[in-house]
Length: 180
Image (cartoon, rainbow, N blue to C red; front, side, top):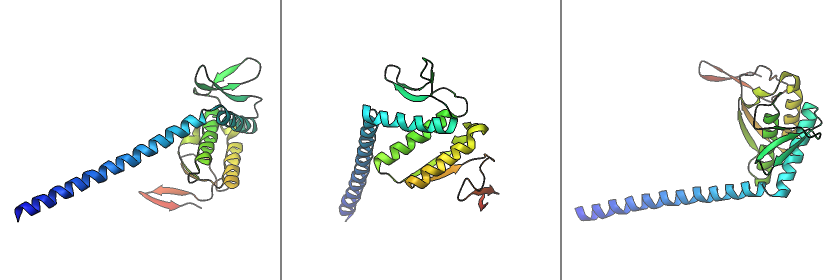
């Protein structure tokens, strides 16, 4: 009798290990898919599309006559002013340009993968300056309307107003309370 229980126990243990191995396999497949998407993004066609989208966003929000370009040699995105001047987008930029470009690239990647059109941003928009903030929010709202995106934004930023968000909640004594 004890032998039968030992065998059953070992079978359950092996089944549990098999389940864990299968779960690891699924995770590895997802990683391979993500790497494939990243490689595809870096192909010239996809990269040019990202540059064009980011350039349109930067020009419309910041009213700059500049383009977003990827420098293959340096492996970085640059803001190209067309007169020989270029600035690195990975460093801090005046007005929050990197935030806007990051938003555009996130939208582009989600749309290319046909994933659920939901983004989570945690205090990400604080870098956008007061001067450009309302145009940035208008841009974000337009993208959400046109392409069916939802954004869950965590922020302490009091610049967000009821006309910029569809629902807002505030934390009060550890509970979420509807603000609007």
